[in-house]
Each structure stands twice: as C-alpha cells, then as structure tokens.
Length: 224
Image (cartoon, rainbow, N blue to C red; front, side, top):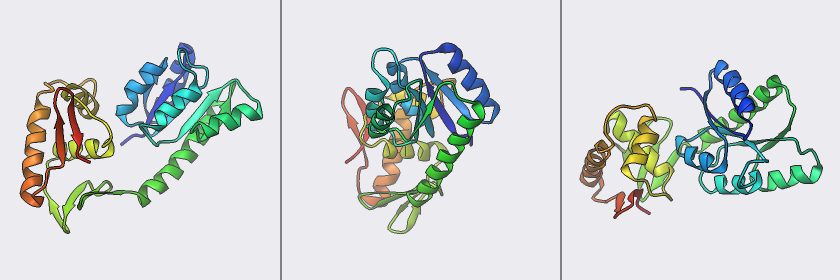
C-alpha cells in the first residue's frame, strides 16, 4: 500500500509540481490550498504532511498545532523563512523538519524517505492498541479478546481500525464512508449503519461489552 502524503501550500503551481513528482515516486498524494482543506483531509490519515508556513487565513504554525491535535504523522515545513528563530518556532509548534524554498526535489524526497523510515520503526513498536481489554493488532489486522481472535470481514476491521485510531472524534456516516471507502467510491453511506451493527453484535457476543457508541444527532465514536 502506497504511503499517503498531504501537500498543503497556497501556490497552485508548486502543489501541482510536488504532486506530480511524488506520485511519480509511487506515493498517494492529496493537496490542500488553505487551512480548512487541510483539516478536512486529515481523516485520510496521511503518513506525512508537507506544510507551507505562509498559508492563507491561518498561518502554518497555528495550523500545525491544530493538526497535532488530530494526527501524529511527521510534518515537514516548506517555507521561504530562513531565520533560526523561525525554525525554532516551527519545531516547537509540532513540526518535525524544515526545508526552505527554493529546494531541490531530490532533497525533499530524501527527507520524506528518512522521516517515513523513522516513523515506520516507531509504528512497529506501537502497533498494538488496547481498549478496555480488547486488543487491536494493527500490523496483523486482527482483533483479540483474552487471547482469542474475533473474526471480522475486511471492511468491518477497517471500520474498527478507523474508529479506534480516531477515538477522540465523532464521525457521521457520510464522513466515515468517504474516509474509509474513499472519495471515488460508489455506493451508499447507509451501509455504515449496517457495518456498525454487525461489529457491535460480534464484540458484544465475544466480550459482553459495547465499544462503539452512537452520539445522537452527530454520529459514531469509539467508546471511552
């Protein structure tokens, strides 16, 4: 599965250039031109974010802090600012690296690869999520209770993984369908209700507990 990269920059030509280059290297790329678009694309679970500091509306430093409330993937700042103070502020805001414009595509690719390797090592060490005795093995794509695997279909597991990895957020059916199935998926978001019902039934039979809660009028959330 290709690594997902989110490019956030207010320059359309630069977004296009970077997207074409990175797609040519095998990455799956999404682009955003302002802070609202960035926040709306975080549900795609990017593996790395390229973030311009000079974003319209809200600056990249503030946006970086908002991003950090939702995802933990590496963030590389793209900017023309070059002072030491700017670099320190960027790193303190939650950035992982800093590359100044103009930069070479080969240097950017090398930095992306380095951060993805580092992040992959960390993920291997943090590939197990535990919730009230339930174990979700992200690497093995398995769900376990008291050492026994609870069998789920591929889509059922994807719904579980999505909710438990975003367990501080509430998602309506339409948003879940878009983020799990993809923007170009055909079908109907009402299937989410049926998947959640089946997952709840299997979890309840295996554990005697409820793990997915309905927040009325808003959507679903992994139960705290």
